[in-house]
Image (cartoon, rainbow, N blue to C red; front, side, top):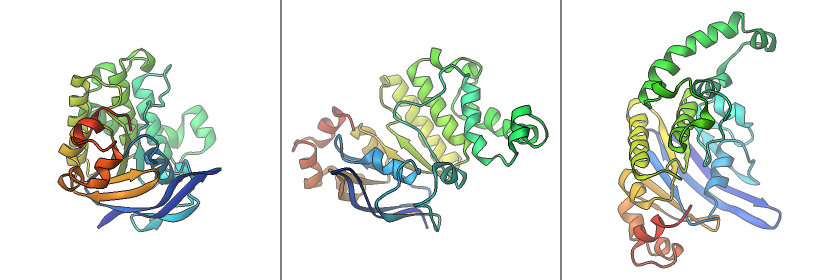
Length: 265
């Protein structure tokens, strides 16, 4: 069963073709990686899936529903969460407040209830607290920083809080946009472990954009490769590693993993 099907997605900005007839599908429970050189269209595709961009043509089918024309909050409500390259967190708020914001897309309470924090809003907050504070925070080992101001925390922890906020949406599909970017070796190792824990323990399908090819080759089930907005290859890691068009896209290197590892996606 496919969690999401991307059908012939095209997107342009003025005279620039960001995506051209891109198609692929992700099976339920799979960790699917999306790779490609700088400017290949990876983040643009994530933005189409999550509703930040509307494609010029094509369809995006999520769990049997066409979500191509939905707004970003409607897509989140249906169970697609995402992280961002640079976190996009509220830096003057606490880690816990940032994480809780992810759940708000599911709240049914009205605006007055939200303003004065009574009735249904209070009930919904209480109902979400156990999962967020006892499951997500425990899973990502954020208990020690839950009350800390996000802007004062190290970058690696901010990326982990971004992941926690995405999990608070209760996603069936999680879009990870360079979750290891800017991290040191120890932080990367921790984040990889958390991503695999999310995959195994929370019944989440993952679409991963990442430029560290050693990581991609090690943890991805399937890889789709973009170059200049077009899909040039798709397959298992061992197939992609030796694919001639993929090697050529990464500057024709004889060692694909080494060259791709040194580039930013």
